[in-house]
Image (tube, rainbow, N blue to C red; front, side, top):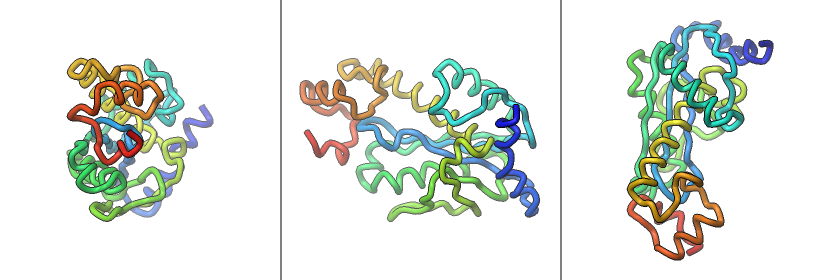
Length: 205
């Protein structure tokens, strides 16, 4: 319980500065060779107890799904946005990440006064975070709101890649989710890219 309570420290600092509605924001899917990049923004009720809340990468798929349902049911506001492979190729992945996160924040039903953003970059050549914000390196393991956003982004993207696996069964997206695994490269060399592959990521082929 001690660790979970400590996850609220960044939010408490923001509240102390007078920001009433603080959202966490994170993205998933920057590294894959295929599929959209997803982002989520979440405003949680203050000090909400969500047992097991943590960085999505440290949770099992089953636990992520359980927390997804709890977060979406209990959040003050939440939103998920994505940037398609075509836009990633037309710009760059850093800009796509920024645009996905800003779009998620813009879609919140409650306007955030301040955002806690995972990572150390808040702008690219073709996109930037415009909501007042602070960057938190490894924020998904330091902030309750960012951890919640990381879970929504990860689960949403995984579900999307499972749908893409049904549409493009040759590529086994259900197992590697589009990431650059040895098997994924083998299938790419065998079948060539499909419509959701990021052409700008396929330099090694």
